[in-house]
Length: 125
Image 1 (cartoon, rainbow, N blue to C red):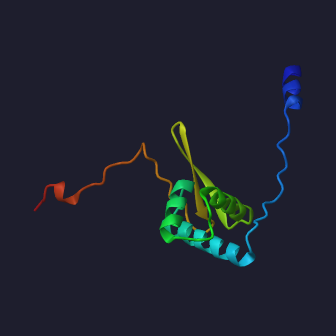
Image 2 (cartoon, rainbow, N blue to C red):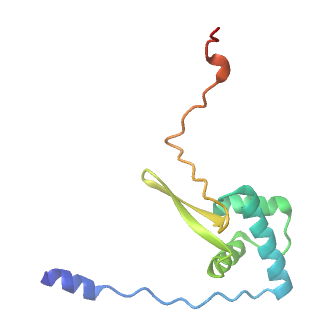
Image 3 (cartoon, helix red, strand yellow):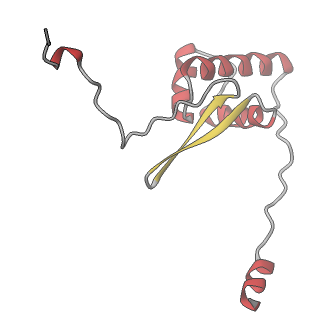
């Protein structure tokens, strides 16, 4: 018990991070968040890489890099415009961004079952 108390007291507390302040003008921030929110809402839970691909397809000029998009996503999470969910499949974790209003459609890749094909079943009289 003494060793447990020592381990507990030896841990450093998690550092308090200050809120993220975006350096873009408010109008540009509004368009960035609107486009990213619409992409996440339309295409369901997305990883950062999938979100970046969709943003590139849209051709959004305000985002300069993937790193900038990550900062905007973190800012949106702080403001509770998006939420981050974890899809835990076996030993792997996948973090997905989704809106608060959509139901999480998590895909288990290891437990996918083949679809029943109606044409393969014998016809009964």
